[in-house]
Length: 184
Image (cartoon, rainbow, N blue to C red; front, side):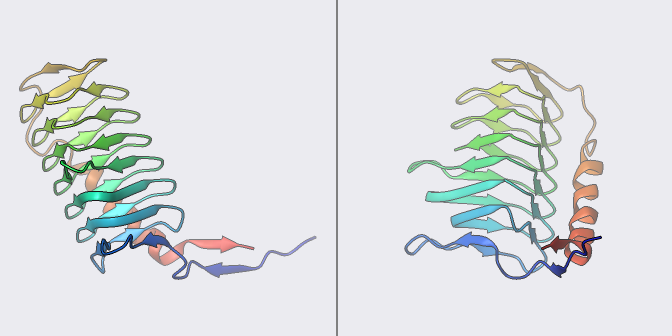
């Protein structure tokens, strides 16, 4: 029977400066070794970035607030004119794409969804799975945006309804920091 050797994840992270643009990652944030961060990325306290996520701030800034999570395969980008801003306690689902937009506190951006240029996702709102939030669309607080293109259902959520998701990823990041082992 073959035996496996293991080692804890080390500092071999795919985090890059690009010229004078460098990431600013809070010491309590968790970045999975298979995530990629490039350029002017700001990652807040207790936030997390998961496998396959790409956060590329080559032309502007991408700011991710405290306790927010960017899940597997998500892509966050910016443009020359537009930063991408993610508030506190936000969940960015698997395979989501955000570019040149604002996602306010306690929002959830669902699996496979897209939030495009100058769009604003309001506090405590949800962008449904695979929805497309088109350019300049503003989603009011406590609302849902569903479909392609996204249609808004206002006032259907309670304040703080999405906190459970953000909290679970803060706990998950602590577990991964302590227990993740690479088998070689």
